[in-house]
View 1 (spheres, rainbow, N blue to C red):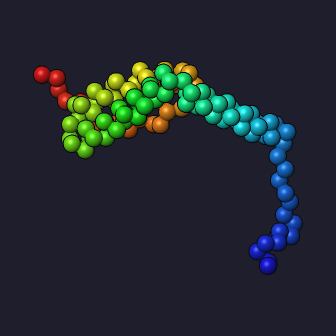
View 2 (tube, rainbow, N blue to C red; view 1 turned 120 degrees about the vertical axis):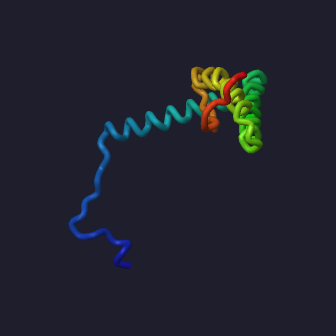
View 3 (tube, helix red, strand yellow; view 1 turned 30 degrees about the horizontal axis):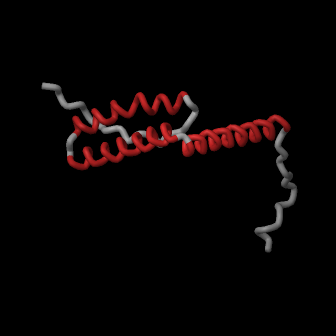
Length: 107
């Protein structure tokens, strides 16, 4: 019972109005992001582009597991322009799992 009671002399730290306002602004921004994400679900073109990005990520994983580093780098390069479009539109994409290591020499 002692652990649930407040210690003697401790005071509650109250947030300032500025802190409360900044927290609410963050909530508003997250709600706007969710509304944009919902818009993507309803637009057939954006939905297909989102599926394309997911497919590219899966293909990169398969190429890395097979040891085909050149293909993994090519797929990562193809993902970048589409991902930048989504970022400019204000939509969040999962972080790209870019291949590590050197690029294979082009012969």
